[in-house]
Image 1 (cartoon, rainbow, N blue to C red):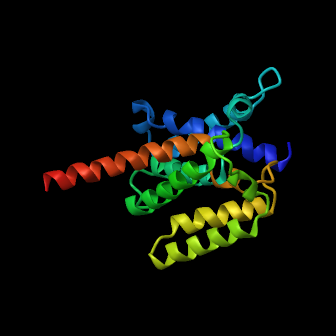
Image 2 (image 1 turned 90 degrees about the horizontal axis):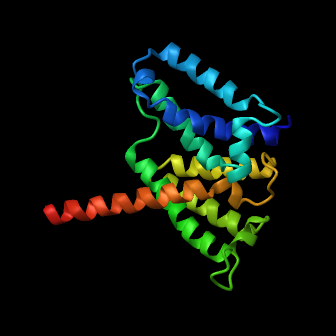
Length: 201
């Protein structure tokens, strides 16, 4: 198994663990047993059955998950495996990253479906403009005291530079369709809650 396949399959193995770790029985286990359960679940998802693993089946349907998704999954699994530990990222950090993903998704996917004359997806094939824009955004976020958004951008650009996936398009390292849907839903929900609080104030 080459590194691109391993990373792509691992993303779905980790994604499958997240809902399982929310089960009441699993939540009652101590940290060591949770880790052992997670390790066993990861192996189960990766082992081929009749030539194809469960993770491979999901990957074949959805495609590779972005490195941003893996970053968020890793953070979520850390919190689930160590419930007493301090969260890696606060609500402001997560909201900022999800807002960025939402804006990028609205810029990318409608045009990718042919709803306009532009094709921003092409900029992911080594466009200097896209890289400069991401670098400036990361610097701006750092000046605002944010760390998760710059980390996600740096991780995506680094992974793209080293060809961690088969794709040669930077957008595929930044976001994916499941992450875009989640980010749009979470951002819309957050804005709605803010509007409700303002009306009550």
